[in-house]
Image: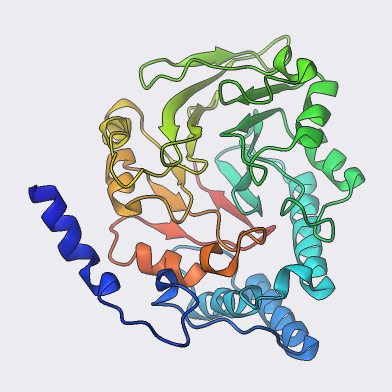
Length: 352
């Protein structure tokens, strides 16, 4: 009862919001309203300015104010209701990710790690010995205009040693991408039962035991140290199951990607294991979905050295569920943990 009252008090300002004509959803009460449409000239100039700010002020801790302004301008553009259908928006996405892939191809590390945000919650993580992909997809599902061409995806897969898939949703799991990994003899670690009705994948994917206590080991090459990982037994609401993959590289760099981890309104039991992650592992980087249930509580449980958020501006979502950078800053306001907010294709280097 006490927990319920606390939650009620914390949520009261949002619940108390009256119906307002400029809001598409109470979820967007603290962000600027979206437009139904906008001129291509304004969109093009906004993208050009944002791109210039991202190049001038790359991801950093602390963050330059001009960079935050550019991310919020992206919110304005990407929350135009017609944005997913606009070729100018689709082209911006492909151009940004192409530049990120070129950066991956150039990057060689002797120490530390570098992380790239490909799309939404798709990540590439590189250390001196291994390159890991999380939830890699070609772009927003069901929108061919955004899709990265197969040749570009092949280049990305060629740079990567292993793919982790958190759960079945198509903005996190893509058969074409998974097949590229498997056909190159690379491992794909997936949530239990993913594509189990497809014999090709059911016989080739690695389905780890979902357990907070089990550290799995997987050999990526014939020789050399193994990769270790934990498949934390998470969920997205009541369903589906959602693996939170914590990966330990041979250098002992520890990264955790949460997929679509979130709690059902009446069941927050996953916090029982979330609150112990930081006691079990020294996490260098946490990659949470920006709208996860109580992101600051998750951060306290994982206790990472750095947070890099994902899942902003998922273009396959309707506007009211297309979480924006503005809300990410709101959710993390006051956190004692350093955090970085990134756009499509950007990379960030973590020192040793």
